Length: 434
Ligand SMILES: Cc1cc2nc3c(=O)[nH]c(=O)nc-3n(C[C@H](O)[C@H](O)[C@H](O)COP(=O)(O)OP(=O)(O)OC[C@H]3O[C@@H](n4cnc5c(N)ncnc54)[C@H](O)[C@@H]3O)c2cc1C
Image (cartoon, rainbow, N blue to C red; front, side, top):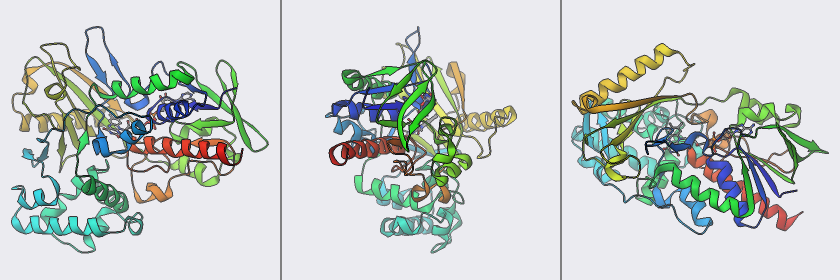
């Protein structure tokens, strides 16, 4: 018997397992695939190239939520030095990314009138109470005080900070909450040296001190007795534990439990959840394309990119240069190949507009269609107050973590923060009631 069984070895499951192991609890992590990392997995091929599933960075770097997990483990993420040359793509041109409200006041991207309006919008965001705006969209928030077509073209960029560039879709409360934290922290995104490989190898070391990670072992059923989760049945064996942490996307839990025993709100949410999807392309060139080290984000096109090799030589063997570009697929994407082709064309035409000779230098490219990028699109209905609770209210000892429940932030941050919350609850429950 162990103290906790964790289903899923992504950011969430690995963080929870590492934190529990560090607190002296015995853990088993079950992972159905052949590698840890989930949607942030990476692997080095036989030629020495490190491939990631997309390219992962961490909002607010050492002041962010991912690093909070590492601080609790007694260490810090090794981030690359902050590059001060982040860029934006707007109207098919590359611009310096303004730093903070003062930067927006000086940007040549907009007319003076639009810059003043944008500044007023940022001040309004800084003063707003997120709780009042979770159920409204960013467009609602903007329209409540402003009217300026130039600034409206900038709203997708604000939405993109929480990975939902549609102003009519993204929850204003989520954007406000994130931007308030970002303005206070005064730092941008942090790129971990060697990408997600660093994150997972370090979490693994903590887990192995007091637990095991079982790859290729799929949880098939959460075993319950008298209203309590008491174990997990896998495709190999049955395990017993007083704490079961489900650390995969919420819709998948419906196959592992008798749904009638779960809170109705959790089941309904899981059945109707809307996720985002994307297309990423890794390009390898035999010469550097640019010396930009920071990240690139689209303003009027939902694009993000990095030239990793300019800042981190651990990704590629000598003489090869990696850059990764991502673009969101339409919200209703259902796997249609024509949509992928159209989106790829749009991405490549923007790349060519911004870096005219880039695609001519490419010696290898790898395209990845990502059916689920973020577990929740941060719409009003999927904003923090509406996401399911981490501790199951109807089954004792069962916890849900990952990027589809009530953690803070967006994307991977929800996974990291929900893991910390579940661990606090488990350790608190152990000290208190059990
Ligand atoms: C291309 C791309 C780029 C991204 N960029 C960023 C970024 O820069 N910053 C950021 O914060 N976020 C980013 N995200 C989002 C981030 O990757 C996810 O939010 C995060 O990885 C989710 O982690 P998780 O642990 O919640 O879930 P997952 O990573 O999905 O992990 C769940 C794990 O559970 C396993 N599993 C499922 N069912 C079972 C079962 N029955 N038994 C055993 N195992 C099971 C799965 O195989 C998986 O490994 C990006 C996502 C993508 C795809």
